[in-house]
Image (cartoon, rainbow, N blue to C red; front, side, top):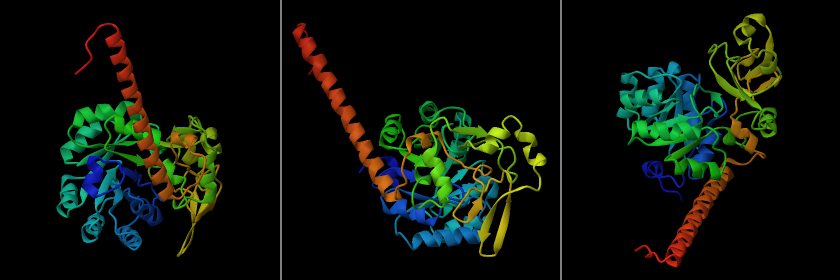
Length: 353
């Protein structure tokens, strides 16, 4: 077990949360992470309130542990907040915009913890002013929508100092126990992991998308505004493909130039839905299409991921590796202290009390 303010707050065994990734962080992943001792998250993205309620109940059918919901600020409705209250969801994270004070008050009034995800000190201070109980600090390495101004390990301590004593959670590039230990050393109370859990059995990405994640190197992602007629010209970190290479530097004209072209098909119970080129909709298990034209969100941490694993194994391995890293650093520190003490005595100095 790793003890932090977040593990104590929610009764967790480890301060690991899967990021509430749009379209791919669904009930199977959230339940698996929570059952493994972390805190699982559902990505609500553009889901209407009824679909969100169904996902929440699907998680409840798989676990009695706490879990949370990630909401995009522009998509929040009163009906979404009704779901949080009526289903007693443990945590709500708001991202990509600012909720109203009335929305925050409603979230907190039903006992749901309220966090925000930010990419700058200014956004963090705004979240603090709104009453966020913890702040997720996303570095520019992170996948998906991302307007961060710095890397995780530069931004994290700066935000922590700016909003103290509010707990901060590290996001972006956290894919293993060593990076988790580094985040904790910089003052994080937990880690928010997207790409590592994207490459899990439970993530709702299709097999081709997951294979692209495993094949990506550290330099194989790019920040682009190419994708998303649904949310135009918003910066996203994605795996490079033919589309990003072809339209690099011409993102503003890409959608108009390719109007009417189709990149894939989303299969739903109500029938097939065509996905236009540059759609922000990710290649889930229900999507067929050309991966060189679809949006493949992932962070730079993909370069350190080489195998698909069950989410529970990811949680267990990251926790164990973090503990081992912390213990190894403690041994180094103890050894260095002993060497210094020995040198001091050999020079006639008094040993430290």
